[in-house]
Length: 231
Image (cartoon, rainbow, N blue to C red):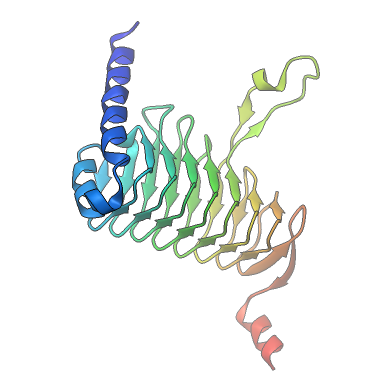
């Protein structure tokens, strides 16, 4: 076994031991401020006044950056393992609700920008890069998947045929309703609304309202359109 692998396993063991001891302690006993101080040495960066509840799981914390005023609630899982270049960046005032899973897999950069809310049970997965903009609202049980399995060969198991990944961009001020699925290679333009249960397979122009499977634009949120509606 290579020295790098041994070091990586040792580092992961220390991280797991520390997080298991500290992360499991109830907030009422430890307090979010003290938990923040104890975690600070593990992360690539941790901002001020970060709130981390008990039961939050971090994997490869040295590749995770957390900005000021971030909230992480019970059951959230932030996983940056898979490659030394992996990065997960939670910018200022991001809120990650219960049981959210964020995972890089391989050579990925996942960024969630300022004041964005990620609802309960959301899954965000690489290995493609994922950029979620400022002040977005991602409702419960949404899925954002920056990868796609190859399945051309009917003989070989799909599991062994590899994947493709192009990446996903969700621009500022978007609202994704309950259970929305965003597939690899998609850009959702600024100010767009995606209706509950929609599956987004193609780019959505800015300030659009899209619904359905696959998602289709049904109207625009441009100022002119909104003025016509209210008149």
